[in-house]
Length: 358
Length: 222
Image 1 (tube, rainbow over the protein chains, first blue to last red):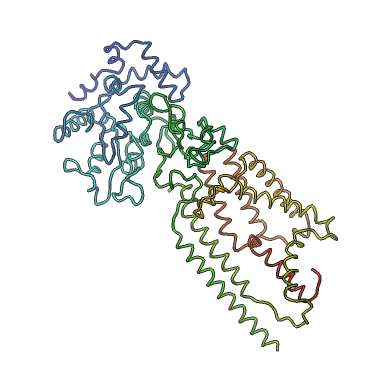
Image 2: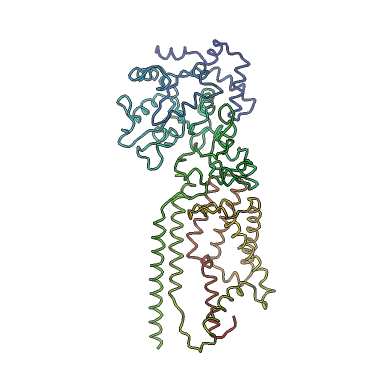
C-alpha cells in the first residue's frame, strides 16, 4: 500500500520541469521538436505537451545482454533531448550496468528494488540479443542466464523497448550460423508490449523520441516488425537526397569514380536504402550533421531483421544470397545423365520400330 | 526469412538448379536422337551443306518475300519485344550487376544504359507484348495452335515486366515486396524455361541449321 502511495506521490514530468526552472517556452519548443520528429501535425503539439506534463516520471530499467554498448554510446549522444535531460527530467534510470556506480550484487539489488517499487509501471529497455542455446548458458550474470533475467524483469514492466538491432531481431549475434541461438526480445516475451527501435546503433533521437512518445501517448503505432511507424514508416531510399539520381538512372559504379564525386545514387554499390526503413535520411546523425549516405557510403540496412545475412554490404539488393556452386555442377551432371538416358531410350525405340517395319 | 530473402536465396538457387538440369536434359536428349537414314543420293558436298545450314539460320530469320505482306506485322512485333527484352536483361544496370554477381565475375567493360532509357524500352516492350497477345487471340489460326504453354509463358513474362516497372517507378506498396515479386517471377521463368516454349532460345538456331543442312544434302531449296 505504501509503495502504491509512493508511486502516486512521484512527481509528474511537469512538476519536475517546473522545479528545474524549465520555462513554458522551452518546454513547448521541446514538444514541438518531438512532434515534428514523429511527423505529427503541428496542432498535436499542445495535446502532446499536456500529456507529457501530466505523465509521472517513470522508472526505467536498462538491461544489457549480448551487446557491444554501441547503442548506449549512441543514446548518450542524443541531442534532443540530451541524455542528461532525459535521465533527470523525463525518466528515472534506476538500473544500467554501464552508467551506474554500483556493481555486482549491489547493482542487482538496485534492479530488484526498482522492480518491486514500480511493479507494472516501469519501462524495461533491452540492449543486445538473448542467447537461447544450452538453456541460455552462453550469457550468465549473477548466476542467472540472460533469458531468466529478461523473463523476470519483463514480468513487471509496463512495456519493453528493445534498442538496437540485436535486442530487436538478434542482430550480429543471430547472424549465420548463430552459435549462441541469439534471438530478439519479441521472440521470447509474448505477453508484454514490445517496441523495437532497431539500428546498429539506432539514431539517438529515435530512441529518446520513442521513450517520450510512450510516456505521452502509450505504445505508439507499430509496423509489422514492431517499429514505431513515426520513425520507421519510410525507406531510406524514399527520403534520400540522392533519390533523384536513382530516378534519372545515374549511379556511382565505384567509390572513386565521377558518379561518386557527383553524389550519384549508390544503389549499384550495394546501398540497402530501398529495403531499409529508418529515419537516417531525415533526422540524420550527430545533431543533424550528416548520415552515412551523405558521407558517400551506401546504407547497410542495419535496422532490418537479419541484415547481417543479406549478402555482402557492397552487393546490390538484387544480388543472390547463396554461395554453393557444387550443386549446380551436380544438377548439370544429372541433366546430362537423364538426357542421355532419354536419348538412348528413344534410339532403342526407333531401332525396334525400324526392325518391326522391316 | 523475409520473402525477399527467400526469393534471392533458396528459391533462386532452386530455380537455377532446375534450369541447369532441365536445359541439359532437353539438349542432350535431342542431340542423341541422331538423324534419320538418308536413302537419296547426296546432291551437295558436306562443306556446301554446312554452308547452306549456316545461311538458313539467317534466311529463316527474315520474312519470306511471298508472305511478307501477311507476316511482316507479326514478325515486327515479335522482333520488337524480343529486342526489348534482350536490351533490358543485358543492358539494364541492376540486371548487369545481377549477372556479374551470379556468375561471379567483374566486367567493368560491360555497358549499361541509363535507367530512364531502360524504363522507356520496358514500357514499349510491354505494349508490344500486349499487341502480340491480342493478335494471338484475335488471329484465328494462331489461336487454334496456341495452348497453355504459350499463355503461361506470356503470363510469367508480364509478371516480370510489370513488377520490374513497378519497382523502378516506385508504385504503391513496399519496395521489398515488389522486388521480391519481380525476382519470384524470374525464378518461375527459370523453372518453366526447360519444359516450355522458352526452350526455343536454345533450339532455334541449331534447328534451322540442321534443317538447312539436310535440305542441302537432298538438293532442296530452303
